[in-house]
Length: 178
Length: 208
Image: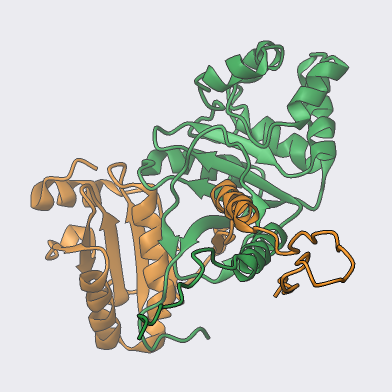
């Protein structure tokens, strides 16, 4: 590309003029390439390419209490976020009715449980109550909220207060000191 | 018959093309990337499928470290000074111009207000060594020892358009997050963003 062949300049021709020897116009690009890649490496390491994404979280206004019709326990799935990346849930019964507590890991198992129960209740009536316990981590919460986005369940609530019934239930059934 | 001499190819390779590529890439990286800012603590965020990008400007970031420490930062250097002025007036403190300038360079911090002044007067190398203890919060969100509420309030006073982003670490415990949540809710902030990494949605999933 940047190379121009100049032929053999400066040769002695018989009786001709003595020409000054022309320097080759070919430049060694190797150091420039070195420099280029050095800079690239620096920029790759020193910058962030992708901006992080964000999910919106809306929480209810604490100053206003709206009276709503009580939700039937049979339509509610209550999820307790426990320790060691496990979630426990009860479905269809309130905590004081001796419900069955099931334990799932986050991810596929969890999504399946959500989908199954949502199907049982049917579309609009299904309500998910998410109750993180003090053993759970921020990641667990984000995972669950993400699951809600994936399964497109619109009716869910993040509640951070556990009733005494629920505490008792978790302690007895899954040995979780909530 | 003389042996046929094989013409040796020159061992020098023409680097021009490679050079072109290198600088093309370099240009691309310079134009697209934004510099990583020096954070008070490393926070590893969980990932979500959400595709909403974090806005570039007018943003207030509340960080939550893995040990439960709370960090705070707003994006604009001018606003940072205004925020510091507001909080100094509220707390009856004064900051010199030098300290203000120093403060405006910090993208986020996790210090109680009474330690801020001595931190700002430290030389740069020493600042990096300081283990920042985090901004004090409490469970009610409005207690007298809760300093996060002061920062949030005064930051919004300095710039009313601030959007609020929460950046929590994977391992941060929920009660600590709850404290931050309570602080925001006590000020009637009910809508905010959670900063997460990006993860591919499951196959066949489409946004509504």
